[in-house]
Amino acid sequence: MSKEKKIKIKRPKAEAPKGFRDYFGSDIRARNLLLQQIMEVYHLYGFEALETSAIETVEALGKFLPDIERPNEGVFAWQEDEGWLALRYDLTAPLARVYAENQNHLPSPYRRYSMGPVWRNEKPGPGRFRQFYQCDADTVGASNVLADAEMCTMLSDTLEATGISRGDYIIKVNNRKILNGVLEKIGIFDGTELEKFSNQRGIVLRAIDKLDRLGIGGVKELLGKGRKDSSGDYTDGANLSTDQVDLMLMFLEANSKTNMKTLSNLSELVAGSKIGEQGVRELEKISESTDKQGYGIDRIKIDPSVVRGLGYYTGPVLEAELTFETIDEKGKIRRFGSVAGGGRYDDLVKRFTGQEVPATGVSIGVDRLLAALRSKSKLAETTQGPVIITVMDRDRIDDYQLMAAELRNAGVRSEVYFGNPKNFGNQLKYADNRHSPLAIIEGGDEREKGVVLLKDLYLGSKLASQMLTNDEWKSQPAQISINRENLVTKVIELLSRYKQ
Image (cartoon, rainbow, N blue to C red):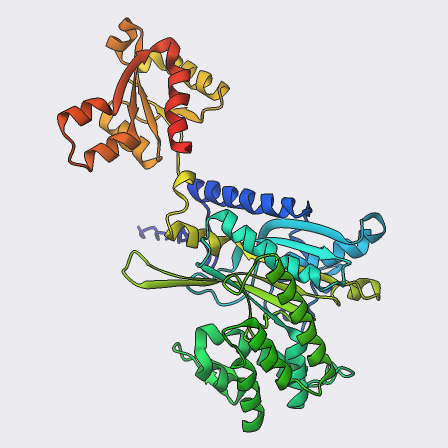
């Protein structure tokens, strides 16, 4: 008899695609709290909520396919009978489509905020994901540059509201019109023929946007022939001449210790360019407005290196950078860099309506900001888990469930341990893993006496890590006995300590 051939089943790897995120419970709670803090500031400034679809047509996103067989570069796209569809790569392009559809029913200016995931079809790296959260605020229909100044002050207030200390961030502001003025002077910008040199300008913008990461030397390579990175990947350059590169570097080095001096340097650099001079005047108004409101150069600074990579910006652009460093679990220095950015995009709605509609906005990268706050130990209050009701007697599970119901009715997050209750130590280990503040214990002896034990897990951990005398231990007991009828009141009292 011939032996049966065994069929090997190839099992899929239990891992997410590279560059995508999985969110666990504590991460979701921390993120939601952060979103709530951001939303409160946006709401304080008068913005209203708007939720847009995660799927848009390619045309609505403002990208165009290079050929019919190949999806969009930079976005996740697929073809259906009605054409190409794509996952949104930001929250701004969908806003332009929504405003164009509903502008007759919306107030003008229209002030909205939006929060949600976006997707980028690009190479992932440390702190760079293909899926991440953004939190946007935009004003559509206001041409006044003071609307751009407001974005700067609101972003400053938002960062501080989330726990970023003053001095740990800087909001850098520039104007794409100034950059266009410099590009005009080197011969690759013509306001009447925007398609001319468009590819070369795009390379220049992306090169300048990488200044913080690559330094002047790396940017100089990208402005010239090109650059090979540490992985061996080669990036084509803008192929500017030596004189053109020198003028671009002068633009980047116009930065000074005061906004007034930086503006003076930029004014000299773009003299003779109408669009460049207009850009300087707009930055002057922004600087004057923010300064009068008390937002000095320690919070909002004019910086020529800020260009923003997206091509739809038409005027002022801004970027919030975290300036502190932390040490990661491997002992390496970690810098978080930019956590937010935005600017003016007066032509985005025009694609749908044919009429220019002025607009400006700001977008916060929630994931990176969350990581920065966690590294600064600003998220301790978000890790509190549920109160754990231990199971000392399997036959009395209904009594334990009743405790949980009473606590929940009083607004206390709680759960009954449903694992194997045989090993009590495992139950406390579970409570510790869940970041539980309290464990409730009621065995047979406690039941007869009409009491329950409350084990303060936070205090117990603190006492165990300190050299305390017996008297100090007794004055701060990590476990107390209370009457059963006082359970809810006492639990609320203990939990209130951690909210102060």
